[in-house]
Image (cartoon, rainbow, N blue to C red):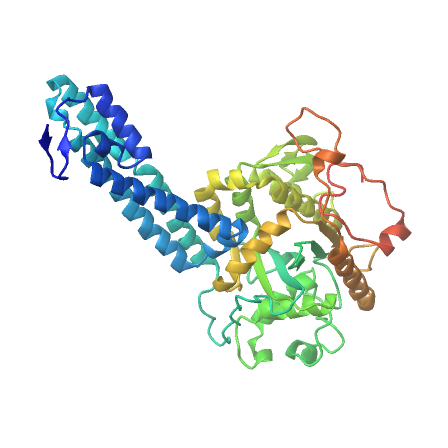
Length: 495
């Protein structure tokens, strides 16, 4: 026996090549194991104690915090930067641990062949143990870049700072959060923004129950909130002289574009389109819109590709393209992003209301099929696609509370109301009726119970594709009295 740098007697018996590798692998999982084998008792016990304390700390944090709340907290730059620093330090520390463990096991007493083999494999193991830390750091960095590129850190020029959420009551006593979800048809040959898809998500902050209100793009004679610049310009509703080139430029989907193109209405302030459209739709439905998110529809196709496609039941063949050069065939299959978007947006042999229903089906399929495992395994692609497709005014600091709410929506009851004929006449809308229907849908959503698990109501099946729940058809009178329906109701079945 002889002493080592740890002040403890070290065994003379050499460790075999397989023993060296075995103790190194064990040390990668339980730091300090190789040091104890080599007689470095103080160092080994210290490493094991530090490792145990670290695991217990993580366990305590996990037990003390809800997963949804933790997910929300890790949307902030400070938290993500801390993660990047911590995992970088841990990665280097684990690398050094494997190298030092190899040294204290004294591989120099092995035959030359054993030294070469163990040295090579020890080097590979030292690099390998850094990979998980590198992946975690890269995910944190990608998340920080994507979130920072989408959500506002500071208010835009001329805007007042957003109200800071209070930790004890982030919703300031509000029962619901209303977010306007817009689909824009961005095109290099089109001036301005036309919002061809307009949906307001009204979310109960306690239960996550959500109502998705869909407004048609061709809603005419739109009314603006009294006292606003647009109401002063159009006191009798949004009406413009006929376009000589044909078409209409005074429908609901043109409000954003018109407001952006006429800053003089707002005292010279530019980029008022989002604010005006939010206020207009809020006034139409009788709610206050908190934030908006504008999605580039073809960027949305990239998001669908990023999650590996979505499974949809196409009821009938959908022809698409300017010259009808494409076809999404009828049947149940997994669609790539481009086909899913053509299914949702094709105008051939279709009207706006059919397109709205198909868009709702795509949203429902995406919500159902973007499970956590898929998001994690395809995280980088999803983050990149998301960064390219979204424009929003949601302040980043609010994500701490909005992410847990969004995760709650995943398992809550989501219903949909589409303001289309025969429910309303888009040429001569009954604004009071629209507000009454919206108010009732919100009340029903507030008192609704969580949905029953799909497995309890679906018939047994061995198919991997989502089953379609058959619902009895409603009469026109029943639909008029209670137009709210499940998000995927009417998708893939008889219409």
